Length: 267
Ligand code: KIV
Image 1 (cartoon, rainbow, N blue to C red):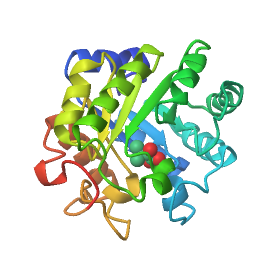
Image 2 (cartoon, rainbow, N blue to C red):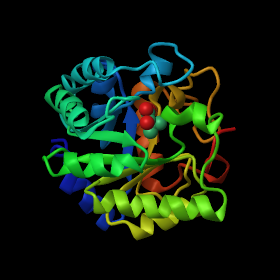
Image 3 (cartoon, rainbow, N blue to C red):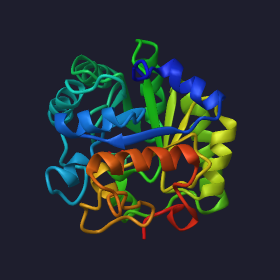
Image 4 (cartoon, rainbow, N blue to C red):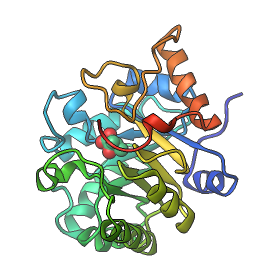
């Protein structure tokens, strides 16, 4: 019999036991069923769907209607995994709008919502978590801020921005965030955040010390034309897509993914 459903307390217990958490993006029922069957702990309905599903250059085209639709598709196919859904660009300019949109995602089947950034998002995180919405913070490279950042670049490289990121991580957790995604930051900084916060950190291009790892499904299946340097093609040498998903799960659990060249940042 497969494991029972993955829950938020279960993910927190995994951090306490130092068991690595596995996460992949999914956008449709067929892949969600495959990822769930591979016993990947978390499934992220990411706004990366703008790039991999809609063919946009960024995530900015994604609307709350899009994420609600894809969350419903994914949730319909999941028996075990914890489902996290993104609040896309400009979907939470005020606490009230954030609450309305988070409720739509939860009603579509999400178990938690993810919000990019700190600053005003700290108040939004508090507002949602006080209203029973589990919130995942997202720090480091913020794809929704790509034009402000001037591209997809590693963040937190200098002392001041690293310190800011640590402060933001602690502030988000104090506001009620129960998960943190760390994207494209130096491995040492991700290790420090992971040691400081009591909630699981899920890294992407953030080195091996995070409590868990997430990749975009289409990247780890080698389907993306320009593979990020921190990703790995798990279909390479696998006998099937299902085998590739299991290889990813086992590599994260064993701590063999990411390996040093896959550590931090975009190519
Ligand atoms: O949208 C997404 O897929 C994400 C991951 C890159 C963490 O936010």
